[in-house]
Length: 84
Image (cartoon, rainbow, N blue to C red; front, side, top):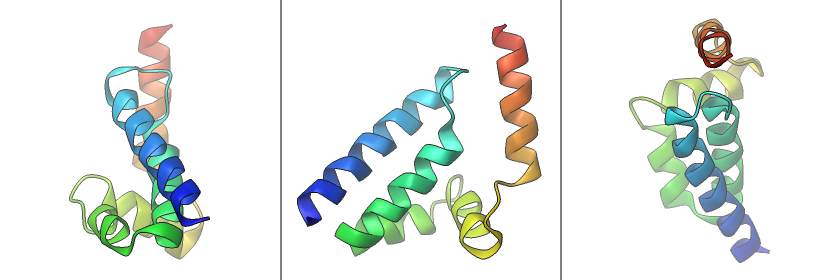
């Protein structure tokens, strides 16, 4: 099962990185999914995401509060409105 979780984590990171420039693809939920997948497959990559200066705080907030930070929600809505 570890290779499956690892592959899903890599795919989520790739899609999340694409979401940085594509306004309709949500970066934060994909990075949270990647962290969950890496927690089951690769402690090294999980630690990398956990301590990442950009993605880490959102993942840590999700782990602590089970919610996406308000700033990320506002940025998502503004990006979708601009794309529309």
